[in-house]
Length: 178
Image (cartoon, rainbow, N blue to C red; front, side):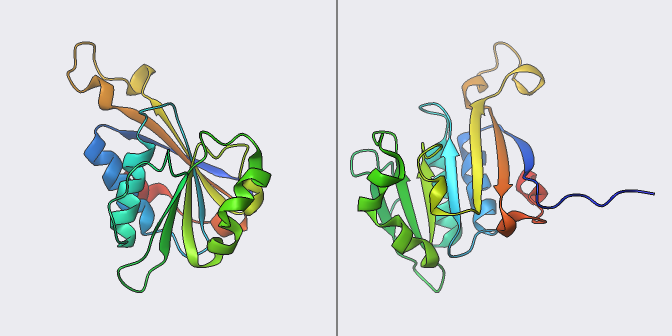
């Protein structure tokens, strides 16, 4: 007899992404799972591919404007071209005050009708929502790392997508790996 799986516990989905275009494609696939009110936290070192993933999200959501890093403006709003949600793209790298400092951006006002993606948001914006998708991007190591001398070695990333909260309980994240 099997025991039922606990769908309330966060489920981590590990993926290997082999190129910048594959990272954009992951963003497009991820966009198909998102809906207004979703919060996505992206973490990874500089150059890991957070903005590239967000470009794919913007393409998948069908938003207006080129998705570029909002490092110097902190947040960019990309309105939808159709009936879908807006994309609010935030770079919290230079913010150190947590949610108090983020309040000036009015993210809590934007959340119900938008998809909010926060780069460098770990430890800063979790209080915005009990439900969130956490995406960690790392350079591939071990079995996932390319062979030594491989010209594309710098492009390979290990990505872990974890749904947190009731919104993501039972959501199958495995299609992201296709």
